[in-house]
Amino acid sequence: MPIQNTAEGPPVGSAIGRLSRLHTLNTARTQGRPRPRLKPRGLPPALEPHGVWAVTNPADAALYGQDLLGSHRVHVDPATAGNFTATFHGVLIRDVTLGYLDYATDVTVEVRRLPDNYLVIVPANGTSTITTGGTGGTEVAASVAASPVMAAIPAPAEPMTLRCDADAAHLVVRIERAALDVHLSRLLGHNLERGPIEFAPAFDLSAPAASRWNFAVQMIHAELFDPGSLLHQGVGLGQLEEFVMSSLLYTQPSNYLRMLTAARSPERRVVRAACEFIERNLSRALNVADIAEETGLSVRSLQAQFRDDLGVTPTAYVRNRRLERARADLADATPGGGVTVTDVAARWGFSHFGRFATTYRARFGETPSHTLRS
Image (cartoon, rainbow, N blue to C red; front, top):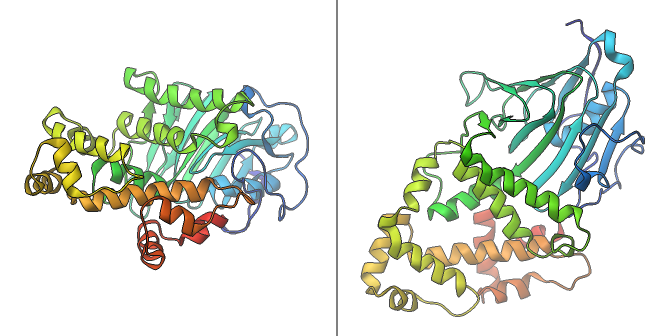
């Protein structure tokens, strides 16, 4: 395909068009106003009010699109360059972004290096070829012929090429890598021993197992579409995102799927019951003796089962879950809402603030104050 009207965005890291907490755009440092245009083809009604940018040349598409895809180049065939229009609609909940990307003509997008996050890319209509990998940790490039029934999950932090025809617009679900890693660690009960999560690049949405993922995405759409929903009130953000992440982890083959399935097998009923008891009682004083009494085991037997099945002690498991709850409260806090780090720490049983901050940073890679401000 002849190459013309090629553009490249600025380096990854500049703050262009970033989404804020729920459904607004932080335009404080956005260069220029997005240009209005007609509604993109197939745009979900729930995302229609949430336009982030709309441009009419490849240069701006690369500039504004870097938050989603990283630094990239947009190539347009000279024969169709006059029809080029690119739009992006998106909503950032907390760690999950639901977006809709439409170029309105044939394009080839060459990404130098995707951001270190997980993307699920689904053509809402038309077809696309999405190729990822070939350098770094991925030795062989993987190519997916994507369609409305076949999504692509490109490898994070790898190069990607997206070739789409004029009919293709893309629903994009982006999950922050750190959040998915923490969520999987909680489901497993220990850190990710096999390294980063590696999903199979092709995601068959027509398979029976994929119904869980489809339902999770539809639920987000439904919550966004209803202005009176709990999501718009800031309630249930964490649970909804965890549902999306769990659906992906349990549905799509990965290097952790077998281990994850084994963690929920019938043979692990005692530990699973203990985890459910912990979940119901995280906000109150809880010690190993309480958990052992609930499960009918001795403290020694309970500790042995946790070590064998989850690779952690009951005390460490409780601490990790409380840290995750604290992070959710800090991330969901709104400016002017009166939420403080000290209050959140105390709510989840951390009486020593300095120790809480140190443990929190070791787990999430940032301070509690940073989570509260971001």
